Amino acid sequence: AVAVIVAALWLPRLGAELARQTGLGEAFVGSLFVAITTSLPEIVVSLAAVRIGALDLGIGNVLGSNLFNLLILGLDDVFYRHGPLMADAGASHSVSVAAIVIMNGLFLIGLTYKVMTKRFVVAWDTGAIAAVYVSAVALSYLLTACRPEIREHPFGTCWRRLIGTSIRRLFGRAPNQARHSDFRRGGTAGIPR
Image: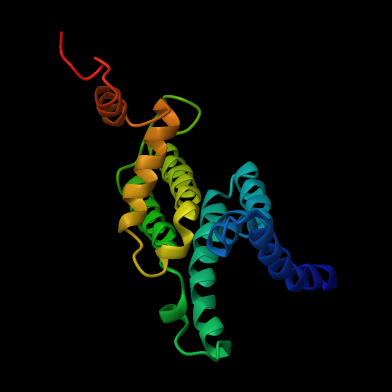
């Protein structure tokens, strides 16, 4: 128990330093690396419960942990002395919040409309939950490129710049830009034949 407490006190410093050195941002590092690290005991307990046939225990462990983890934000707010905690939190957390809402919705649908077969290794509901998680992590990573302006305008010029950068990386430069620049130099790339 002492080792867990010492590791828990050390982990936030390690995560903050990782975010600083990699430039990934604290929201991304916290949502991915720190979250996975602190969730390892829950994974072990849930898998052990499923292996012995105590499915509700395993599911209850995950859902109860999710509920309790959100309750921790209230405790964090008590110790945060610079004003309301949520007012100072970065807007980049909106991706995680949206993913949580969608994943919980998919879980509720899965509980309501029971899937009787698996087409692949997982049922459609758990597969969709995993796909939402992977998409949210990918989107959070992509948004780190726009980190300075996310706090003020989470879905403003960042998206336009991100899309433009993606097009340039995929095609070398934007397709219309290539045609227009060739035409300005006297080329025929922009003239239909």
